Length: 462
Ligand SMILES: [Zn+2]
Image (cartoon, rainbow, N blue to C red; front, side, top):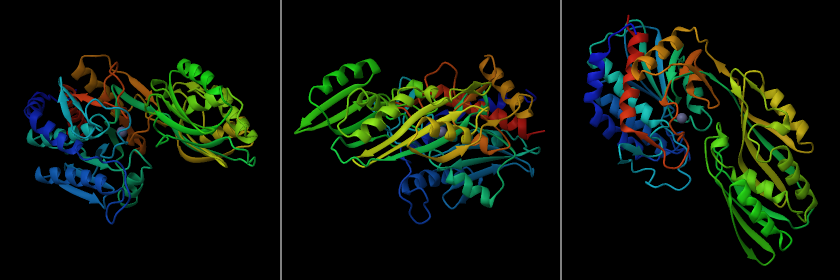
């Protein structure tokens, strides 16, 4: 490292209690995307979180800007060139069973439990205190100005960043503390599609299947109302155990009310969860459904997707230096007349969204495949100043080996010409983003803050 950061580190240590209290207040705002209101494009709760951060920054004396509720920024420095630290204040819904309520921010055994503690309000708060410390240490940012950028729609459609881009240029260079350490310089392509089919057969069979809330979450629960032959459910119950899901049912007349429970996870690492929707489709494919159209459709989906997380039977199980493809069935909505399944795929550099669509279409003949989202893979050379600097900081602060990593999650880093994701998850620690009982260790907030502050100094000060 070019700069001595001892004084800076001591200042950050002194912020510990204040940082945690500010963060707890922010975590208590359940900032899940809601219905838009005037001046609140993602609903009141998300806006409350943005205003909370804006007010905190103002109270610290930073120059702030609020881009109509889409993005809040604050900056410090004298240069025209900008180094960005990009985080987000929206969270995914707190699904699953929580030991500690998701919006109370309890601290137990040195861990802060809350939705957003890791992803991404924790790192957002760390970036605020990092910049505060740099200013308090009297370090002049003359090479680049540091701009903190807080988004509000990262978990959904990135409408925040798109809005911002229309008004202001995004930084040329920056980090997003919204994934893992050491340094993520490669992000896989992010692809989402809706698979549709209409049923013409009017025979009673599947009346309803509903599961999943977002394409980017492995759905933990799915419910179904199905008319099917008596005795079939026993075989499904046994098979459910083998798939690692729990199957519960009630019989009402000739209708089976079925509930399948698996385990949620982030869609970029579907193998960490157990997909309840994929499991239910696989189970229904084992029996003969009375409705011929539904019977065929379910068998096709089970055969081509099934419980596979890598798209093998679709012929997209590609792996290269940017990682391997992952596939998640995120949302299902089947009625007696229509099937609609939303999938989320993270693809490596050697594929394109067009190829993915084409292969799915070939595999699932008779279905309509509509691509709804396609973000190209992102890559920053390991020789770039940014990557080298961040690796150096990581090695210095942790004493551990620093290396670059490819991921399937899309962070704001990919919105920048030279952007890398940096933290907050440490290698070997459990992956908690989007999961129940999300937590972060208090000590990690401090080291995260120190490393962000070091990045600001190394990249912004002469
Ligand atoms: Zn995030």
